[in-house]
Each structure stands twice: as C-alpha cells, then as structure tokens.
Image 1 (cartoon, rainbow, N blue to C red):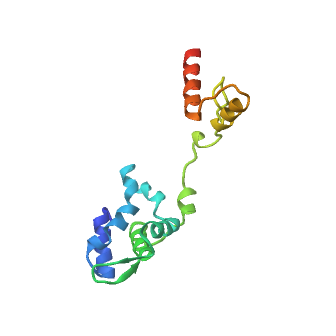
Image 2: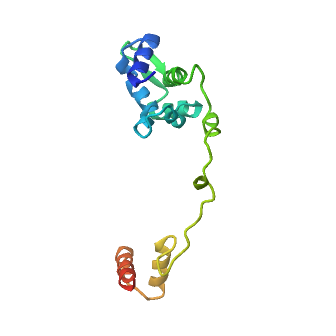
Image 3: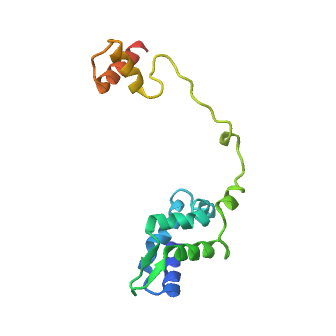
Amino acid sequence: MAHPLHHAESSARKFGGVPSDYQAVHEWFDASKEHLALFTHRALRHHSQGLFESERVFGLTLTNSAGRDIPVRWIGEQHVREDCQGRIPSMADWLRRIQPEPWMANGHIDRHVGSEPCGDPRVAWASDVAAGRTVLGLKDWMAARATQATQGA
C-alpha cells in the first residue's frame, strides 16, 4: 500500500461504507511519512501499541456511512497487516532493529553556570522576598535577573 487512500478503499470493501469514512484513521497511521518517506516511518505507529493509541485518538468505534459501528482497532489492524506483510509487530520488534549510534547513549545533565537560576525560579524568588532582598513580583524579579545577567556578561 502506498497511500492512505488505498487503505481507506480497502477498509470500505471490507467493512462497508465509503473510503472517506476511514481516511482519517489511515492518515494518522501514515502521518510519520511527513518526516521520513521511507518504510521505516512505520516504526512510530505500525505496531500493537499504535493500534491502542489509535483508539485513544479516534475512540473505540467509528460509525461508517452505512450506519455500521466498526472498531477502530480493526481498521488499524487492517492497515498494519497490509503494510507489514500480514503481521502486526510489537513496538519491541521495531525498536530491537534500531542500529545504536553513540549519540543515542550516555546523555548528560548540563551543569549550573554562574548566577543563572537553577531549577524552579520561584524558590529563589521566595527566598529573596523572605530575606527582604526584593519586593518585586516573580515576573518583574525574573526580568530584573535577566537584565543583570546580560549586563554582567
């Protein structure tokens, strides 16, 4: 299948109604093509977890133009099977096949630098208010701190 329309036409043949009844669901499954127009885009939604996510997005059922309630999961299962050679992979099936790269591991936490507020600025502001170092409201205090930081740099 190359396009959500083809999936929607297949859904209309299988469940009744017209392709436009199903178009939004199939477009959702293929939305990641906007970022990568290769089959690997399917790793984001073409799996069992994607089926359950589609239910959260579209609801448990869709009423087609013939008046029939169709489980959204059935529509998703049809889409995934058509794209994945008849199977419904798990998310783990896709993730296991990612080729690890050095940038994917060994993250780091940026260290606190200079007099920049660290964490929630409300804590530092409340401390300054309690110590009598400011009578400014939080928004004005933050603006004053930003001005001090740029002047000091």
